[in-house]
Length: 545
Ligand SMILES: Cc1cc2nc3c(=O)[nH]c(=O)nc-3n(C[C@H](O)[C@H](O)[C@H](O)COP(=O)(O)OP(=O)(O)OC[C@H]3O[C@@H](n4cnc5c(N)ncnc54)[C@H](O)[C@@H]3O)c2cc1C
Image (cartoon, rainbow, N blue to C red; front, side, top):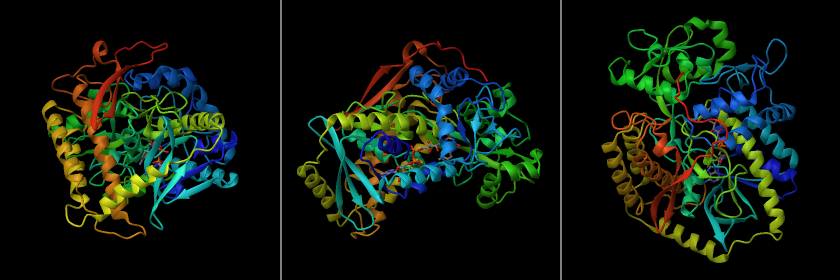
């Protein structure tokens, strides 16, 4: 939506295609906040924000992108505020900022613990105000390339059925994350990596796919998130003996070390038998009822509803869950991909700002700052392209035939079983800790699942809200994305950020692996390559919290 607003304001004729109503996007579930160096709670600067992001990324983030990000974030926040975002305020009446993990200063702007909800309403209002056309409840299935350019998408009309061709002189992919490859995830059911899958199938390169972030505080058994804001406000993590175990893993930052560090510490405690039924405990009792109710009302409600625990009186069982995909469609700092006319922004893109590990609060900011930049660049390219794009009739006919084959099949396996097996096996073999043998096995498991997927049956043949069909298509994206994750994961023989190999390669290896992995589809096979990391002013150093 931020990209659409910018492209519209730059003079482009914009349409937004979305499988959900835009305000139901996963962004609306973001709780904790959005980072910009405003310096309202303590001295801060874009340089410190950039430095924290670079170290947080375990030096895999591209520093030119990170510098732009940290520099442009503050004005993007004021813009949102001017549009009507009701951020929480401090006693001086300025925008309040709370501490978040691995941030050198309290830098996270927030609206209680419903920040994403507030932002998504504000952006949608701006779309409505501008009269930007939203094709809501259209499932984008295929990107169309013709003559070396992206020409638009082919989408399934969820409400009425049927394929529709949506042409565009520029196309910006922004379909969010892919947490649904995992069984335990904070992500909504819609986060199935559709965009990453579409780009892959068109031969567009993906970057750093092995890096899936595990958030340290997700509820058992659902994987629903309790925001980092809980620890930001002072919550402790305890093991079964009541010990604040982070003292052993990150003696300075404790619970507010970066997410990869905290998730690994929890996993170690759990594997060493010091967990509580496969969890550790998040203790907020000492914060007091007033603070919990005023600052973290949503988290309290989630804990009460989904774990049956009121954090005012009892600690909440939590464990690491798949949360955010650092990898994605490879772009430059204006969202451009390798294919002319195709852009990507938001969680589906890999610019790369987050490198091997994203800092909490940096993702919402990335969607805004790089969404805006992609919108502007895409509008300019559309203007230069001049005449409107057209989707060749043959592309639509090919898609019709492929869909016809899928819907025409009458016997065979239904997709849900494959989805379950994928989610469970990813959780077991590609979680917080990665080990050579399970990863190799997982590659084979995914290959076998992809083979089974090739003959799945969609039992519902109807046109109206055929979720049987869309879930089958989504599963295809999940399988492709998972295959790329594993392909790169096996070959990254080091531990960096969220990719931890405790047994065989426990250390970061800058000599051999200070580089981005790049996966792309060539003749139906996923091929792996490597590209350099951009370093401007910060040389790799040891990371301690
Ligand atoms: C529970 C939770 C809490 C979080 N909290 C924070 C936080 O406090 N701070 C922070 O910085 N980050 C947070 N994050 C991360 C951050 O919210 C996300 O990375 C970010 O919001 C992703 O935004 P997006 O616009 O890329 O994707 P989304 O918000 O997921 O939007 C994707 C859009 O694409 C559409 N779409 C997807 N596939 C298709 C398709 N095939 N066809 C048509 N449309 C499609 C969907 O309908 C949706 O409208 C959180 C994430 C989660 C899951």
